[in-house]
Amino acid sequence: MGKVTGFLEIDRQVAKYQPASDRIRHFREFTIPMSDQEVQKQAARCMDCGIPYCHGPTGCPVHNQIPDWNDLVYNNNWEAAIQNLHSTNNFPEFTGRVCPAPCEEACTLNLEDTPVAIKTVEQAIADKAYELGFIRPQPATVHTGKKVAIVGSGPAGMAAAQQLGRAGHEVHVYERESKPGGLLRYGIPDFKMEKNFIDRRVEQMKGEGVTFHCGVNVGVDVKVEQLLADHDAVLYCGGSETPREAGIPGIELSGVHDAMPYLVQQNKRVGRENIDSVGWASDPILAGAKHVVVVGGGDTASDCVGTAFRQGAVKVTQLDIRPQPPEKEDKLAVWPFWATKMRTSSSQAEGAIREFQVATLEFVGEDGVLTGVKCCEVDERRKPIAGTEFIIKADLAFIAIGFSGPFKDSVLKELDGKLTLNTDRRGSTNVVADDRDYKTSVDKLWTAGDVRRGQSLVVWAIREGRQAARAIDEALMGSTVLPR
Image (cartoon, rainbow, N blue to C red):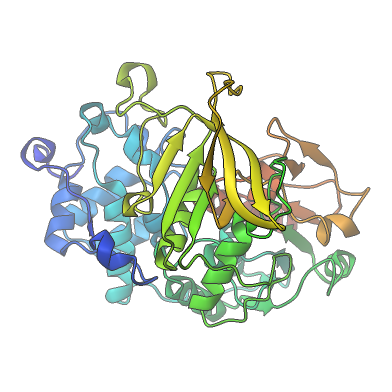
């Protein structure tokens, strides 16, 4: 597993960033790549820990064989490393950029706060594989004659499409937007992941026989019933896109927006696309020269912060109802699970003011236009504390408190009464299917990704897409060689 004494001899190192003063001037990625030799040294730190929690259920949803490819990188065998990585993860260049790396939290060396730089090594393997020409189309040698439709081209849909195409099925992917990628393309800012990485994978998949139909809103432009009639199987990977209702007075004021329309618009600007979008607001939302308040403490909120700074916001304040977490967790009580501790994203480090244990009481304004956000402190049960009210000046406010399920005006509307749905503890409406066969209550219809499990990580969507592909292949052919 890397160099036997590597963890004793080599300090942890991860890729550095461009200075904040430089990176907020553009929307490109700002990570400074490490040299091959530096990456190999970090891979060498992977120790013979006995039980590698990093690739178990606590560490990696796709079960990446992290110690194996760390050893291959250390020994300069990049081709075998990408083959190993691809055996569990179709898109390591995506996860190497946007995954929060629960594998590093689960690393044995994290007991000493110096986990192996797994995410850095993963991205380096994928980028090196492209550089050396190791990533090429792998078309099926035998075709089954079966035809599968996939609704949605996010990470779950793309992963399933690639797996099913390589299994020899005729695969058609239907995407509502003008380009494939789903919220990988339209929700994640370019400064976190540039979209040429998606384009490269799409071209690879086209070379494997996958057909993409963009600008097609299934349930509206093409009926689900028609897809079911024309295909042997249909996989619904529509994602979780409906913003969670905030219930905050004043939400109707001009200047108050849900987070996702803002992010989608800016991604379309960067991609030189028309900002009009099905399901999202089309009036321009821009933060230049404005005081911005972001309600929410997650990744989407952080993406709004970084986007606002790049658009020239004067001041950005982020509100989080949760208490400020400790700088370090109690390892003996938490490890190897994901710990609640103080984390600062690259966007927050660009100058955001973070307010913890604060509730948003009301958006206030004059003549229908937002002028401020009324807040107060809350107790440990998130109840307002009387007498702690204050107002933050705001010209623009974004609500980024999560998503409650898929859009209801397309697939769900058409299949109303036929498709079994459930409401989870967070109030999200998800399509019912188990994580073994991914089969819905509608014949020939499967589902995977956030539309099934609720809003989650890109890496979980990839995992579900791969598992659903295996289930579909087995149902169509009676057996399967696709990995679970």
